[in-house]
Length: 66
Image 1: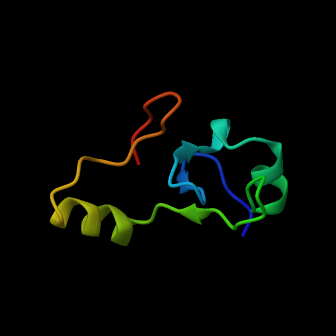
Image 2 (image 1 turned 135 degrees about the vertical axis):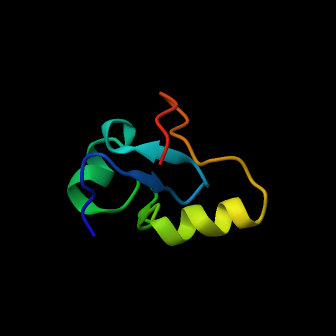
């Protein structure tokens, strides 16, 4: 899966990053530097996160929310 702008992604180390902060490897291959696929933060993921009482998922670099 190749990422698209205006979305958040989870990397294998649990970091949440927006498209602008993913890095070239993830943008062009859909995998992070360790070779693990990135996962798009979907509406279902956001809902499950909220249901569990966790704070909103945001980019760890700029704070952009999902």
